[in-house]
Length: 94
Ligand SMILES: [Zn+2]
Image (cartoon, rainbow, N blue to C red; front, top):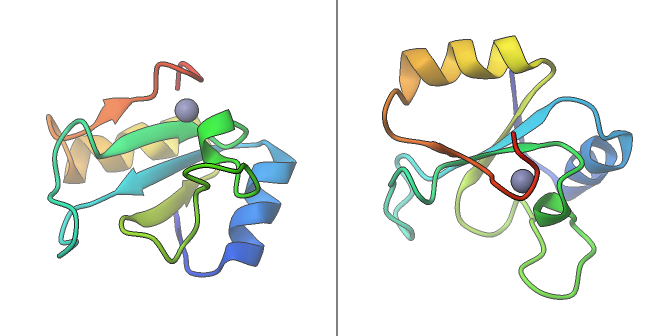
């Protein structure tokens, strides 16, 4: 896993389209953590597009972005740290 701290890295993950991005609000003081807000996406999901006009994903908005290289890595981490407190994106069927 890798916490993504800058938008250049976030763009490269989206462009490569490999792996998963988890939008994590746990501990965020602006947006309360909830299963609905804590969302796992495939890296190439349209909702992860950092260049789209509306609601573009950035590392500056609330929710830390965590990258996982594989599905197994993502679910192992989620099971251990966010069990019952996350959802999978229905747009990309993560
Ligand atoms: Zn998605």
